[in-house]
Length: 456
Image (cartoon, rainbow, N blue to C red):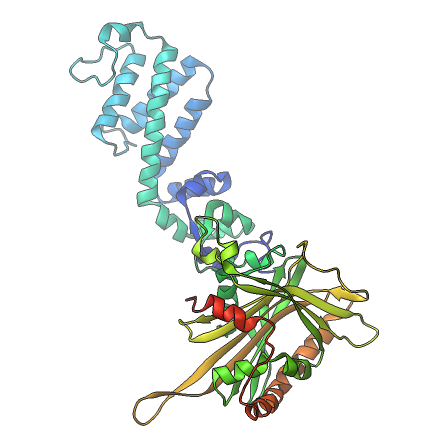
C-alpha cells in the first residue's frame, strides 16, 4: 500500500513523525488498554487497579454495591500503610477518608472535616447522597492518578516494546487519533498535495518537494540510471495523490557550468521547453492567483499559507493511437534561503468553476513536480566562496490516466534523464548568444517576485 495511505498498518518509522498526546490515548480505548498493560508490566499495578475500580464504581446501579466498592478502594489504595497505597496529597486522602467514614456510619471529627455540611446534617445523608459525594471525590482521584501516570510513566510507555508492538498492529489513521503530525513531518505537509480542489501552492507543498529533491537516502530512493552527467532515481515508496494511487516518484539531477539565473532563464523559456520537452505541445495560463486573496482569513497556520500561483494548462502529445494528455493546475516559485535554492512547484487540480472543459480527444491526468536550482559553491585559494555551476533537480509524479502502460512511462522517463544534460547544454549555449533572456516563463517569474524568500 502507498506510504500516505492511512489505511495501511503503522511502521516503526511512522511513530517519530507524530506528537502523541496522553489525552488522545485516553480517548482511544485500544491504546489506553495497551497503557494499562504497560503499567502492570512496569509494576505500577496499584495505579491501574485503582482506575479500574473507579470505573467499576461508576458502572454500578446498586447503591449498596457502590458502597462496598468505595470502601474497597479506600482500604486498598488510600488507607495508610495498605499494601497498594498510592502516594496522594494528604488533603485528598483525608477527604476520601471522611466520606468513607460516613458510609461506615462513623462520626467525623469536627476539627478535621472539609465537607461543608455540619455533623447533624451528615447524619441525615442517605447512602445515595454519600455515594454522589464519593463519585465527585473519585473523579478528582482519577484525575490525580492520570496526572501521575502522564508525568512519570507516559514517556517511558511511548518508548516501550509493548507500545511499539501494539501500534504496529494498528492502521496509520490511529496515529492521527492519538496524536498530530509534527511540523516537519511528511504527514503534516502531504495533505494539501492530495487535495485536488486546491488551486494554489502552500509552504507545506514546497516543504514536501524540497525534502524529496534533496534527500537521496537509500531508504527513500533507488538509482535506476546514472552517468558522469546525470543520476536518475525512483522512489522506494509508492504514494497516493488525489485519485491517483500507488505511483512512484521519479527524479533526476544534473550539473550545468552556468549560474542559477542563467539555467533558470533557459529552462523556463517556453520557446525552448517546446523543443527540449519534446512531448509538450501547448502551455496556456488559465489564471494568476495573488497570495493575499487566499490568506485573508485570520489564524491560518504558517505552513498552510497560500503562495502566489499561476494556474496553467499543459498539453502533451502522446504517440498515436494513444490520446494526448492535459495537466491543469497551479505552478509557483520561491527562493529558500535555508538551502540557497530557487524552487519551482507544479501540481494538478480539479473541480474549479473557472477551469475550461477538457478538449475533445484529450485526457486529463494527475501530476506533481518540482524543479530545484542550487549553486555549486567552491572555495578558491583566498578562501572565498565562488559558484562553479548549478545543480539542477527535476522531480515528477505523473498519472497519465487511461491505458498507458507504466513500463512505457518508466522507460520514457529514464531516457529523458539520460539526454537532459546534453539538451540543457544545447539550449544554454543557444540562450547565451542572446544574453540569457527569458521571453515567456508561463507566470513562474511573476510567482517568484510575489513570493520572494520563504525559509523552508
